[in-house]
Length: 407
Image 1 (cartoon, rainbow, N blue to C red):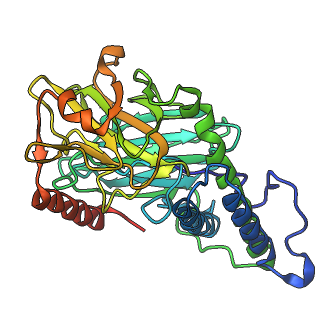
Image 2 (spheres, one colour):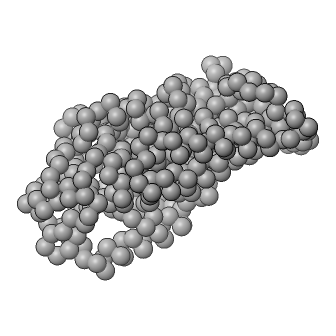
Image 3 (tube, rainbow, N blue to C red):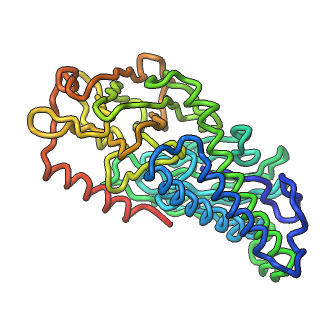
């Protein structure tokens, strides 16, 4: 998931600003000014309540700085590459802990070729968008499909031609999604522009470098404003401690449905989310996030679970317990505990991908908020994990993230 402003070289940025080549050739000044503005935006966020919130904000800022420089400097419209700018060190847009995100900038009237080898992940999807996410909402989706439309060779290799587009195509987003972190392996993927492959890169110029620093600054402040605004379009329109019925994800994929909401829990409270395990999709998962509208620590805490990781009860339902303190039942901690990691409030999202049928309200979640002490009585099946098993689960998460994630 990528938040962008106007990033095309040679085009006018979308916000006001002075000539980036002025002031004695001080190339980095626009970006330095943007960093200062971004720091003020983070420090003044109205949801900051604790020192942890503020520190996470500054860590979030570091990820936004990193991503904005990468997006501005790694891309070249003549020689496109797939950029991985959203990961555990650069979180944004309630990023999915189960996904690897790739992003490339496109130009109308040009043909592109994607080549690669399909891995064993649950879903590999492609989306062409008419811009980037911004503070006004999601951009139009011009095309969205998954690897079921690819012509795969016996060894899993494929070649996919995209374009030429004549409808404002600006970005390609590729999502590779893991259902089973322990067994699934990512594939390989790269992109070429057919009319410019084989040509040398244009030489650097003062003007191009100045423009890139300027673009990076605009991406930085634009992305922070975008993700401050975005949950108010969706999550925060819903009553607290509720979740919607499965629906098409705004700006999302044709084969994806999602359920959204946000929680507010006291230290002695828990939210029990009950949802049927869906056997008609390759991927199903739940995650909780922070008020920065970003994933929380999914590497060393259990803040997300896929249907492969979760325990499904004998009645076909998965029961998740969202709480700060560990919900204890006989034998240890509830296996499907989602840790809020010090966040009293935050977004919640469930996703279903690579669906074989549409979903209705009966496929979606129900929610009940209760005192933590009441959780055991609310769970008809008491699946628990002891301290050693919980530690093994965390160790497995760390190893899986180290093996599959890019940064």
